[in-house]
Length: 104
Image (cartoon, rainbow, N blue to C red; front, side, top):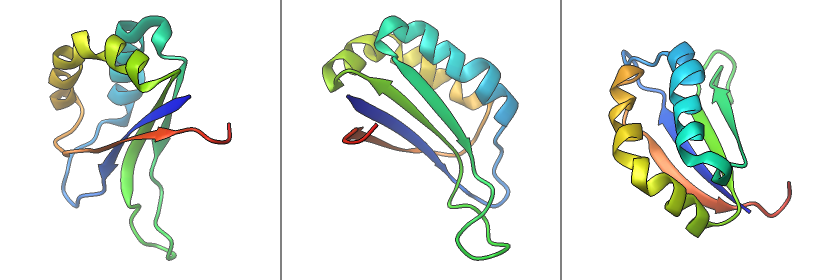
């Protein structure tokens, strides 16, 4: 199993609409990917390691799929639509990563 992670770095003054992300964007991604999206999680950053410090990431999502190939096959045809929706909830440029899930 793989995990595709999208991480939005905390950036002072940046915009991130958590409600839109939770209620519109991620359901859009899941709907377009269909059964290839086994599940997803959303994290909302609360703080960093030191008391009172800002979180490293304001938000993250993790999309689970059987393989890189199944993820790419399901996501690829809808990539433009999904990426075009980003402007509706943030102006932050995210970091992405694909990981192998070794313990679930």
